[in-house]
Length: 187
Image 1 (cartoon, rainbow, N blue to C red):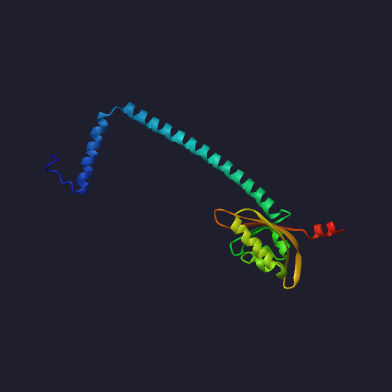
Image 2: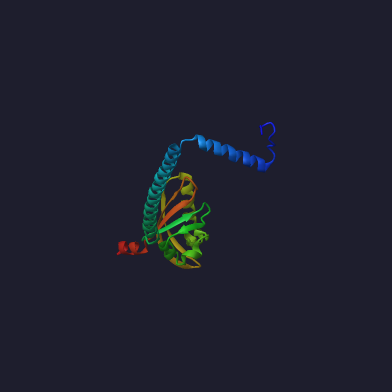
């Protein structure tokens, strides 16, 4: 049967012709060359498997290093003796540490999405607003001392430093309770 007489649309006939062609090709090829190709392919697969195992080990080590760093910095952030706050441009608390929550006298989870300005004593609110504006206008670190409190309940005198991040325009604010320091210096 010549290729002119062959019907390429008949799937069964096409398969039979392909199998005949494969048998002829296999007869012509040298068997040791084929075994060498298989051995070469097996060797390449084994090397690739070892490479993947080595990469996996490196990834595990990198993960463990990252986990250790995360634990270290989480502990450093959360348990620091100073209050850390991340505020957005209108003063809303995005994040805070445990000390920050303690300074404000509330639970941490209840303070997220609250406005920090609500915790500034009314008589110091304009001073805080000026400080907060200066942070965004100057682009450098600013500081102030204000009294925190709400609902006629004083929380204490604090020293604050703030700076704005360049990437997302958040205010990084540190708050340190200094009422005890002021009492000692007045003695």
